[in-house]
Length: 241
Image 1 (cartoon, rainbow, N blue to C red):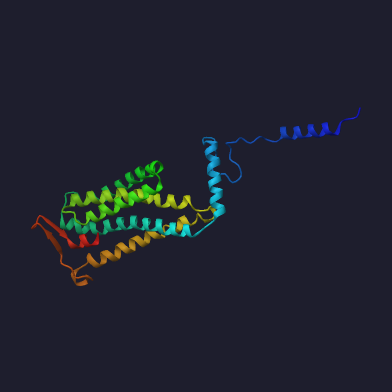
Image 2: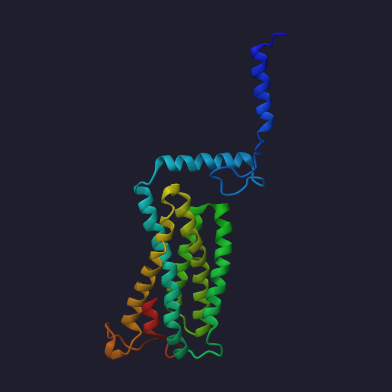
């Protein structure tokens, strides 16, 4: 009995489909980094669309500006950390506390809290506002720390500035890498070079104020006194901050 060629072709196609393993929509495929089993497929499709669009746009002058913007933020975070470590000995000598490592402890704890707080807050209020506010908090309390009248106040202001810089530290890398095309994401490692820039600036500024008077580039007096002797602030600390 003759066999219909079309029927044979259909049967062969169905047999091949049965033999081939079916791929789960959430399994890892070529080029995938993680499984999408626990991810909303609609959200995953949107993310792929955005990433593909960024790749098609490529690296532009906007990314160069973003590199310097986030790099300056990265450098400020490094500067505040290094300036605190440089000035700690001078502050302890001026205002002898019972516990001489309180500022360092508060600084690192505030960095942790700031990173957790601003990292999650940025998803609610947006990257732009979180970035700007965290950097503003760092600037305000860092300047205020230079006029601290005692060790406790200085340690508190330093910790508050670290609360802002800790959040800004995580947002610098996050904002930068989110806009980078996939073939340029190695620039995120290069962003770490700004860490050295911040420490260099802090070291040069402190070198002009926190050395012996015969080596001091600015030849400033040893302290500024406000309201008699109640608020006697080391000029090295005031000018450095």
